[in-house]
Length: 246
Image (cartoon, rainbow, N blue to C red; front, top):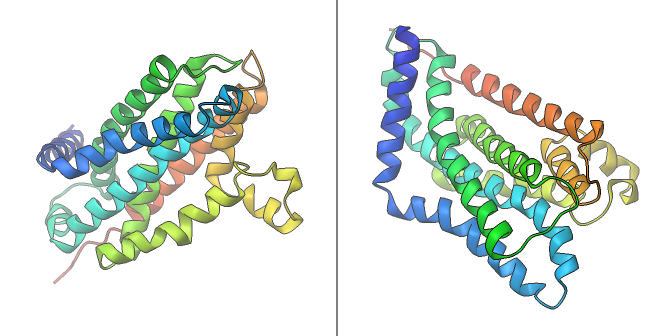
């Protein structure tokens, strides 16, 4: 019970901290919506193309934004000594990571719901499959961005280094995840690499929902794999925490 209270206290502190950071709030809540609106404008003369592309981008946009926000904010906590003080308390490392992850995931969920609502009700996004599944995958993509952000923050010493993980970890996933070219059209080596990356499965699920009216076993497989990557990233994030001993 004590550990749960400590995790929830950490969650509450991060939420209160982010609420006072107006620029970060604007980035989280407005940027994906504006990008989705721009995408609709680009394909305003070809609605069918927008309906094919937009579901995948509903996952990609929040994924990128939450990765940046989480990695930079958590890095500030590390360099500012806040994490070090938390580690001095009799709580588990997993409880601390859970507190951080829950706080960022809550913001990410709101962000994803706003973006999805704009795409569905204002931009008139249409897919063959159930819309709730699109929203579900978008939410999981957001949490995936949070988990990867928590994990990679341990390997950066400055905010600039945290941003450098974008071209090192995020952009390669975007290029080979099937967003621009079907996986079976990629060179064999890249196709093999793509199946080892989490964004591939998220984009695959969102692409499939545009083609199938019912949820298929392959789509549930994609969901399970993404959840597995989220759990693995959170475990690795907890392993990067170190207690200082005198």
